[in-house]
Image 1 (cartoon, rainbow, N blue to C red):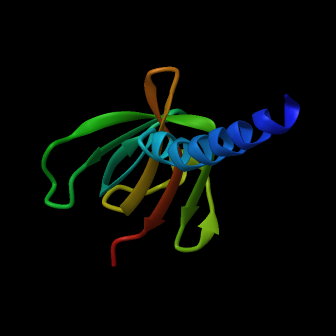
Image 2: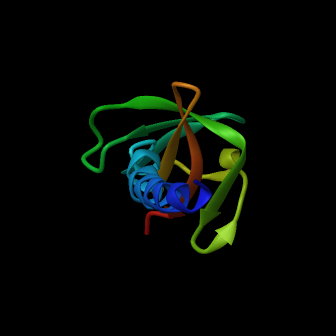
Length: 104
Protein backbone atom coordinates (compact mmCIF):
# COMPACT_ATOMS: atom_id res chain seq x y z
CA UNK A 1 0.00 0.00 0.00
CA UNK A 2 2.83 2.43 0.69
CA UNK A 3 4.29 2.23 -2.85
CA UNK A 4 0.96 3.48 -4.24
CA UNK A 5 0.96 6.51 -1.92
CA UNK A 6 4.43 7.62 -3.02
CA UNK A 7 3.34 8.86 -6.50
CA UNK A 8 0.51 10.80 -4.87
CA UNK A 9 2.95 12.49 -2.49
CA UNK A 10 5.26 13.39 -5.39
CA UNK A 11 2.38 14.87 -7.42
CA UNK A 12 1.20 16.84 -4.40
CA UNK A 13 4.71 18.19 -3.75
CA UNK A 14 5.06 19.33 -7.38
CA UNK A 15 1.63 20.98 -7.27
CA UNK A 16 2.39 22.86 -4.04
CA UNK A 17 5.82 23.84 -5.37
CA UNK A 18 4.24 25.33 -8.48
CA UNK A 19 1.43 27.19 -6.70
CA UNK A 20 3.26 28.49 -3.61
CA UNK A 21 5.59 30.97 -5.40
CA UNK A 22 2.62 32.51 -7.23
CA UNK A 23 0.80 33.00 -3.93
CA UNK A 24 3.86 34.54 -2.27
CA UNK A 25 4.50 36.89 -5.19
CA UNK A 26 1.05 38.42 -4.70
CA UNK A 27 2.13 39.55 -1.22
CA UNK A 28 5.00 41.74 -2.52
CA UNK A 29 4.62 45.09 -4.27
CA UNK A 30 7.14 47.63 -5.63
CA UNK A 31 6.51 51.36 -6.00
CA UNK A 32 8.54 54.28 -7.37
CA UNK A 33 8.30 57.85 -6.15
CA UNK A 34 9.80 60.90 -4.45
CA UNK A 35 10.42 61.50 -0.75
CA UNK A 36 8.32 64.27 0.79
CA UNK A 37 9.33 63.67 4.42
CA UNK A 38 10.33 60.90 6.79
CA UNK A 39 10.04 60.02 10.46
CA UNK A 40 11.52 57.10 12.36
CA UNK A 41 8.89 54.67 10.99
CA UNK A 42 6.96 56.52 8.25
CA UNK A 43 7.83 57.56 4.72
CA UNK A 44 5.67 60.20 3.08
CA UNK A 45 6.09 59.99 -0.67
CA UNK A 46 4.50 61.00 -3.97
CA UNK A 47 4.58 59.47 -7.42
CA UNK A 48 7.38 60.61 -9.76
CA UNK A 49 5.26 63.59 -10.89
CA UNK A 50 4.93 64.91 -7.33
CA UNK A 51 1.27 63.87 -7.09
CA UNK A 52 -0.70 61.23 -5.16
CA UNK A 53 0.96 61.77 -1.77
CA UNK A 54 0.71 58.92 0.72
CA UNK A 55 2.24 57.68 3.95
CA UNK A 56 3.70 54.18 4.24
CA UNK A 57 4.89 52.35 7.34
CA UNK A 58 8.54 51.28 7.29
CA UNK A 59 9.65 48.31 9.40
CA UNK A 60 12.51 48.80 11.87
CA UNK A 61 14.27 45.94 10.07
CA UNK A 62 13.86 47.45 6.58
CA UNK A 63 16.95 47.65 4.39
CA UNK A 64 17.42 51.34 3.53
CA UNK A 65 19.98 52.39 0.93
CA UNK A 66 20.71 55.76 -0.66
CA UNK A 67 23.21 56.10 -3.51
CA UNK A 68 24.46 52.59 -2.75
CA UNK A 69 25.13 53.24 0.95
CA UNK A 70 23.16 52.03 3.96
CA UNK A 71 21.37 54.86 5.74
CA UNK A 72 18.60 55.63 8.22
CA UNK A 73 15.08 56.43 7.09
CA UNK A 74 15.18 59.88 8.69
CA UNK A 75 18.35 60.71 6.71
CA UNK A 76 16.65 60.38 3.29
CA UNK A 77 16.43 63.96 1.98
CA UNK A 78 13.34 65.48 0.41
CA UNK A 79 12.98 64.85 -3.36
CA UNK A 80 15.13 61.69 -3.23
CA UNK A 81 13.81 59.26 -5.84
CA UNK A 82 13.00 55.94 -4.21
CA UNK A 83 12.00 52.42 -5.14
CA UNK A 84 10.21 50.82 -2.22
CA UNK A 85 9.42 47.16 -1.75
CA UNK A 86 6.36 46.40 0.35
CA UNK A 87 5.12 43.14 1.82
CA UNK A 88 1.67 42.20 3.01
CA UNK A 89 2.22 41.02 6.58
CA UNK A 90 -0.92 39.94 8.43
CA UNK A 91 -3.10 41.98 6.05
CA UNK A 92 -1.02 45.15 6.56
CA UNK A 93 1.27 46.49 3.83
CA UNK A 94 4.68 47.54 5.20
CA UNK A 95 7.93 48.69 3.59
CA UNK A 96 10.77 46.17 3.86
CA UNK A 97 13.26 47.77 1.47
CA UNK A 98 14.04 51.27 0.18
CA UNK A 99 16.53 52.09 -2.57
CA UNK A 100 17.08 55.81 -3.05
CA UNK A 101 18.96 58.18 -5.34
CA UNK A 102 19.46 61.79 -4.26
CA UNK A 103 18.24 64.55 -6.57
CA UNK A 104 21.04 66.25 -8.46
